[in-house]
Image 1 (spheres, rainbow, N blue to C red):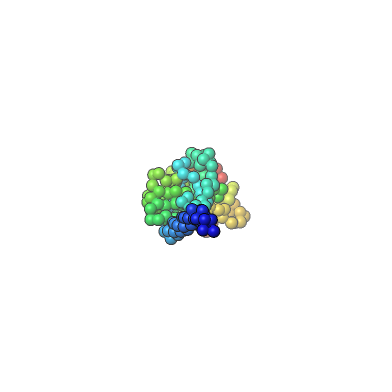
Image 2 (image 1 turned 90 degrees about the horizontal axis):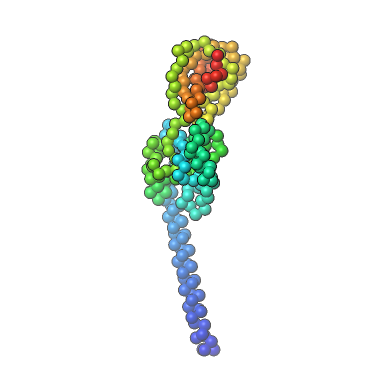
Length: 225
């Protein structure tokens, strides 16, 4: 029996060492995950113009890419297409930040057509108040989908043949048609108050009903006469 025990001692030692190693490895992994979780701070973007374009340098993830379960949710071809596109619907609204271990940041974004959404690497600078502070090596860069345009010489007496929008379509995350009854304004004259162009150079006017100033909104330039 003693002889049998002596033969099994090396095997028992190996099993013991393997058992201890597994305990330490799991403890270290759990501790690492715990540290990551404890040092992730999420907060909302406070910038007045929280809009950006993809740079093509980084992928979109279902959660910040540092996490073990993070998965890429866009292909490289899609990222390259979105980065090169100047279609207004392919701009992104940036609405949340994850600060990881006090060292770097991820941004949660959604495209203005709501087709793409996820987390993307955003560099090593806090940009919650100003997207222009986003690091150059980031997966996004600040970009405003609208720019002011010159006003026409004649600004009064226009009529419209289409609906009014809260903001030009695909220029803001919450752009929507204003629910007005066309019969209440279709024959009224409108005044042009402002003009903008989007990333494609499409011109929009901000109109105010000259008979009822409560009726106002944005419209594509070809929808007035």
